[in-house]
Length: 331
Image (cartoon, rainbow, N blue to C red; front, side):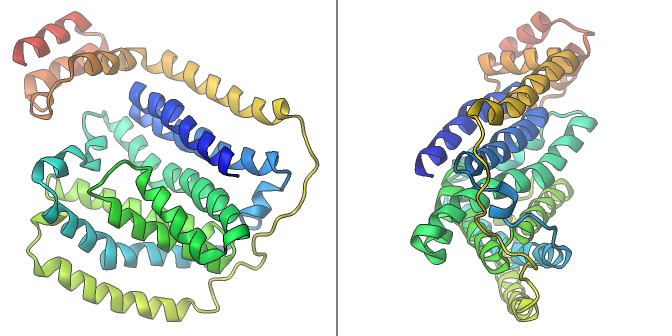
């Protein structure tokens, strides 16, 4: 379990990081569904347990899923916003800007932005919950008990995002998702809460633009914290006895299969995804590689002349050399 977890996190950093570097919208889906979710499923198969049963995904539990959505929305108000506002007020502004996760929404076409939003709101909750709560927490829980498993997994989950500013907020989210998965005996409410949190935060960012939690008047996060926790306590009481899955997760042995047969479908899907990316957006990949070499600043990337020429270069109406010359001249 420990060895596979280390391998999976390393694979995500290498394969997932490379995928998102080449094309963020495409890379989000590949890294979350083919790397994170795929390695969670493979992990249970290599341990010779049925993956869907081990993670409580069979059957789908509509009531637990709905309650998970409610917990994600209420918790965002009660804890996520206040913790991010506090962290952004404590950390230097330069560090807040450096680790601003909202940068993933920059410089995208309409279709790409839609794919990024769907990736953040759908692919990420599925992939990350299958791996962190469905595999890692589930395995630690078997040997060290639920409380320790929830806390340890939440720490690893938050640390893995490599964001010191958002560490406390993501740790709290990890605890919430872990509690939901444990009490329900299923990943469905954790997936739903994760999706609700990400969708709400993404939607508010698009509506608020550059405004950050720390820009709010101090009493706004405090009011959200008080009102949100009152609502959260009421939701906990309402969910008592209603959250449990009709068929909680269990470790059911499955027949052993050769590793090659287990890995083959995922590797084939990854190769197909790479081929599709290169066929559809080779120019975009080339521009991303060029940007990595040029390293234009955030302010330079926002200049109208740079944005317009980059868009033309991506459509093939301007050369990569023209774009490179402009960026170098403005640096």
